[in-house]
Image (tube, rainbow, N blue to C red; front, side, top):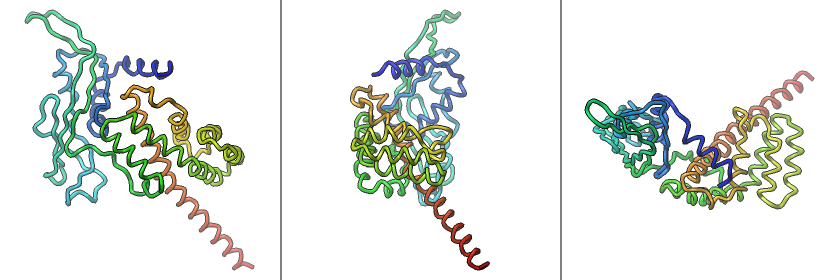
Length: 303
C-alpha cells in the first residue's frame, strides 16, 4: 500500500467522532455496506462495554427499497427495528407492515481501558469496528437498469464485479471494475466530449483530441482528467480521476477492506457517469436541439 493510503487509513482510524455522527455512520453501514466491509469508529467518549456501545448506535429507522407487492413501486420505504439484540438486528417495513430484513454483524473492540469503580473493575471501550457477516434477504447493491443498458458489452464484466462486491470480495470486484474502465475508455472520452460541447469548453475539447491519439487506455484517461468540463465535476469532484486511480493502481496489493471501499467508490462513480449524467446530457442535448429548431422556425416564419 502507498504511504498516502496508509496515512489516510491511520487518520480515519484515529478520527474521534460524536455519538450522533457514529449513529449516522452505523445506519449507513446497515443500509449500504457489503458483507465483510468494516466500519471503524473512534468515539469522543468512552462507554462501559462493547455491548453498550453497540446498542447505543442502533438506528431508530433505516431506509431501504421494499420488494413487496404493496411497496415495489416506491423508491424506498422506512423500516423500524423489531426483535433486535446485540450483533443481530431485525427491521420491518413500516409501509406494508410485512416485509422484514435481518442483519448479523461482528463487533470487535480495538481499544479498551480498565477503570475502577465502587462496584469493581469496569472495561471502558472507545475504539471498535463492526463487520457485517450476514444479511437476509441477501445484500445486493441497487443498480438502475439504464446503467446496465448504457454499459452495453461491458455489462457482463460489471455484473461479475457486483457479484464479488456482494460476497465482500473487494479485490475481485475492483479487478472486474478495472476491466470495465479499460473497455469503456472510448465511451468515457465520448462523454467528456459531449459535456465539453454543451459547456462550450474549447480547452477540454482540445484535450480530448490529444487523449484519443494514445493507444493505451490508462494514458488516454490520464490525459482526459487534466481538463474536465464543469458539468462533469459535481461539487468540483472529478469522477474520471477516481476511475484513473483504479486503472493505474496496484489493485492486488490493497488490503481487502481498502479494496472493498475502492470498489464501492467505483460503483457510485459508474452510476453517476453511465446512468445519471448520460441521461442528463441526453435531455440537455434534446432540449438544445428543440430550442434551435424553434429558433430557426421562427426566423423562417418572419422571413
